[in-house]
Amino acid sequence: LLVCRPKGEGRYASPHTQQAPVGDDAAQAYRDFLPERDAFLGGETHPALLPYRHEDGALDYWPEACLRKLKADLEQASGVKFKIRTFRATMGQMAIDNGATTQDVSRAMRHSSTAITERYYARVRPTIAIEHVRQALSKPKIRAI
Image (tube, rainbow, N blue to C red):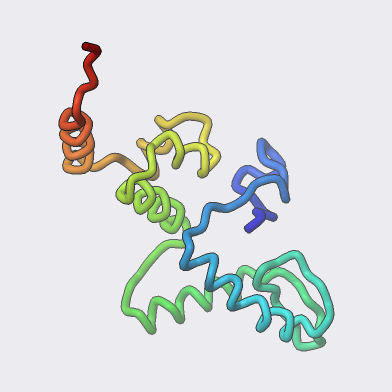
């Protein structure tokens, strides 16, 4: 997926220059979604993955008020309160918990340093760090004869 509206756009990031990291399940869901998107667009084009169609038929980006309502409806239906910005931290933490390095996650999130990633988004959990070190120490040593 190409990021059209990156974090920091206009300050330190340019649109359409970065890819978003997605897992295999998300990539398959994206491929499954494309025919429905094409049908919704009816031959028109729009850069948004999920464009908004006004009552007059014009395509646009989703208005902020509609996104707030959609979020509220999701919270109501699921019984789970959340903040949209939490998705970044969740992605970062899931990646680290599943074996990605802090350096890789920091780069994928376009942070200037791993310190920002660790301070605000994702940390290596102590139990995971201990297990990684244990595994590293358990690897067989190669010795010259």
